[in-house]
Image: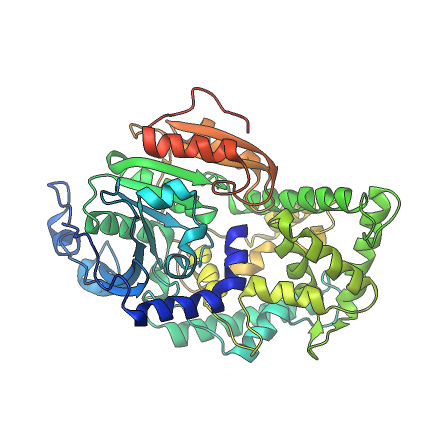
Length: 512
């Protein structure tokens, strides 16, 4: 999930109210454009009805329109049923838009519809927003799209996300407690989501993306994907190589890496981020740590160990468990803009108060002050991820993976162990994935990587651009945070805009 999305969540209540007010005021009640579905001879006959759809748009904000599109629940068995996916687009401000950019904000599990309705003006650059229609959609299982992944009621969701046995995290007691929580979660997902829970994989969503492309009358897709959206994009490119027009993948995931390697890479990414944070913190007057970097890490590790068995009180009356603490620390590492909040939270925690860190964890999990959850981002994230890839539960491989994690020496290492438990017992088979992600023969694809990215480490952007994609081109941002386009780097923004507007592909990495 992108750092911009975290900021966006804090604005959601205000922005949603504003969107409703604008809709009620009648601004731009009808789209100024019509879209003729793009069909061609390559489309299989059994999919013709999906590719020939005309969307019935309704106003859902100023110059913003919402609708639905139908897709097969199972592309290998079209007769098995249909799903409705939610879409939203914000009209370009120019009289003759350059086209429609479909984007995915990340996750998996993040709502593209909410982004467009609530925060379209936070996407990309003003030049992009003025000249292109901005299209967001909720992938199958996410947000308002079918089958909406629905699992636990809020109180039980709290236990699932924040609950702890009170024992050390590497104990059998905590491990069995985690297994029990996951078992209950899976049973609730099956009961409350229904028969299509096993059809929310990324390959199916990539096929849906092509139906959406056609609905906007585009012969080739123009696509912008952040974080998980890069996996969705490269999957699309591997399936529909000749339909790639322009594609930007920011905060890249290398789809050829194993789940174990992905997890280890992310651990190293967050370790780099906490190291960079502590280094800057030690130079400031309000830092709760003093002395050397090594001593700061030692003090922080001691806080984590203590919280495993002694949760911290908060001003809400809830306790901050070790899992809430880890989440509350990880959330602000997505963007250096959040580092002051992390400093405040850690100072409070060292003083015995977990309030700010719990608030940060709630923001990450999209939990509101009333005790409910604003979205199904966690449920859909797990459902999609567990269909796409899983870590091995073979004892020898688990041991080898755990040993590699411990060897990193990361502050977070103890909390990354036994990653196979995350999808343990998931009752659906892995989805079939492309055997080749090179997209050989495609138009140039831009890959943006941030050197200080904690969630999708920079090395994966390098490998995706230089080793995986046959026509990938790397843009490096020497900065902190998760994703870069539309942020502080004018160099990145200019390079991506030159690609979208002038079809300029960097002759070499601009090394921004």
